[in-house]
Image (cartoon, rainbow, N blue to C red; front, side, top):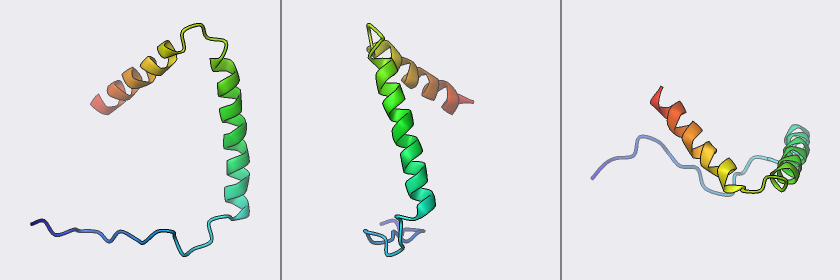
Length: 63
């Protein structure tokens, strides 16, 4: 049997994660997702957008 080389911390984390910088980043991420959702709705075939993400990931991992 393999011996783990790292220790997985228990969940939930004991540290405070709702800090001001995290909440500000959350607001920015929410805005970006809302904009993406709005723009994606204008694409007739949204599957094309999703398919290109898989292709880009494949190219990135091969380099």
